Amino acid sequence: MRTVYRLLLLLTALACFQSVHAAWVSGEEAIMGTRISVQLWHQDKDQGKAAIEAVMEEFRRLDRKLSPYIDSSELSLVNRMASLEPLVISEEFFRLLETSLEYSALTEGAFDITFASIGHRYDYRKGIKPTESLIDRSLPLINHRNIRLDADRGTVFFEKQGVRIDLGGIAKGYAVDRGMQLLQRRGVQHALISAGGDSRLLGDHRGRPWHIGVQAPRDKGNMAAVLPIADSAISTSGDYERFFERDGIRYHHIISPDTGRSADNLQSVTIIGPNATRTDALSTSVFVLGTEKGMALINRLHDVETIIIDKHGKMITSDGLADLTQ
Ligand code: AMP
Ligand code: MG
Image 1 (cartoon, helix red, strand yellow):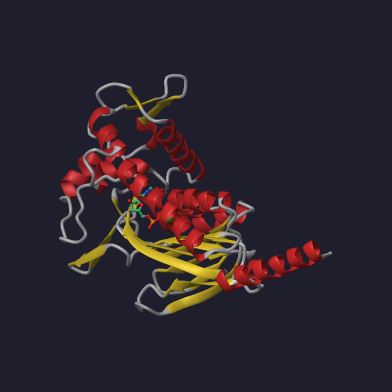
Image 2 (image 1 turned 90 degrees about the vertical axis):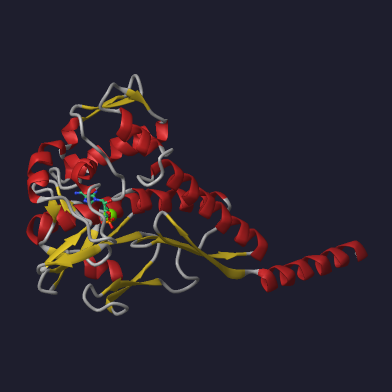
């Protein structure tokens, strides 16, 4: 009896100890050219902090692999070598290329990682852009069909000299999903990971939804909408993220593969969906497609919703959005 009593006492003490230590833990770091922030609920604060560090390390690993600004990244290697001969690439890189090509097919070419064949000539911070004639001459390089994947050999080959790729339209979403997998494996049940415009939410905010703001495109710091959501991903693409203006034209980082120039139909696109790889790729795609084609695509897909802010600042939402946020 005494032993049972002692055991009970010990268990009660343990329970108190745990609830004292259970807490929201958060961390922030600049990686992949953006601000990565992680917030999670953990029974043990130190373990929570270790989980956040694991997520940050995953972002750093993916940055080293996928960055166009790091010479030793696999992406830079592919850009240097893949138009010479088929190049063997890592399984993870191969899968990312396959996924990117799936989105090219789904969006009738609006999502196209070969945009970089011209895109790499822009420097938005310095206000540098390619000449109009260079854009016109280089336009045939932008085409996802210039990328040949061979699944048996695990190789990639670019069909034309001068083709370049960049995974900037999908890499952050992918990294967010990878980070969330890590947290789930560690038993975390409530978390937010966000990488600039791409976020994913695990569970709710303990009894209430998470509230995610959609930035007002022309009013920095203010929200156009705040969405109560749980257990989903949300991405926003906007023409205000990286841009410069010259002679009344806004040169920004989302390139229409048809014209080789900044897509100019919209101010921002927000996509809500099951995972961040998907919402990231689709937000970039719908930005290129514009209101009509973009909305038609999203209403055809059953696992995603959208908020579009068009070039006049008007907000248009997809059919199922109201149900999702209620
Ligand atoms: P996001 O902020 O997710 O819309 O991503 C924008 C990034 O996607 C740009 O900075 C480019 O790296 C990349 N990108 C631009 N245009 C395209 C395009 N048409 N298809 C795929 N990626 C693109
Ligand atoms: Mg995107």
